[in-house]
Amino acid sequence: MLKVLERDPHASRLGDLLQHFRAQELSMAEVLHELQAELERWHREASFLRPLSPAEGARALRRCAELQTECDLLATELVHVRMAISGTGEELADHRGRQLPTGPADDRRRAWA
Image: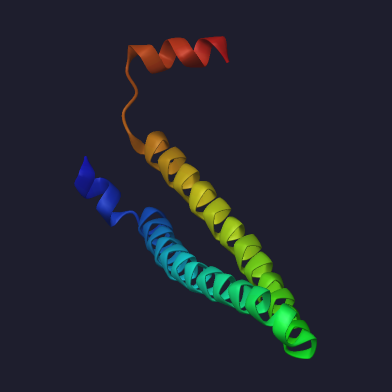
């Protein structure tokens, strides 16, 4: 039965798409983690500079705001990629489920639908 699924071009494309989304998720999560670490460094810098030099502290706070915006945008995109992973996974599972032979339990489920 698995050989039938392996020859199915639609399932193959969905599998490839799922792998692409998962790789994209890992990459984006890593970049987001790095941005958040940089944001934390700038927050510490701003806290240190504000009492010593208000102008430098203000500059550091502006950089914090810029980094926070970048983090927010990337986090939103990461959610979109995770939604794509979920949707593609569901579509692949549904597609594979339609190709598998049904048994008595599946027939009973369909009767109630």
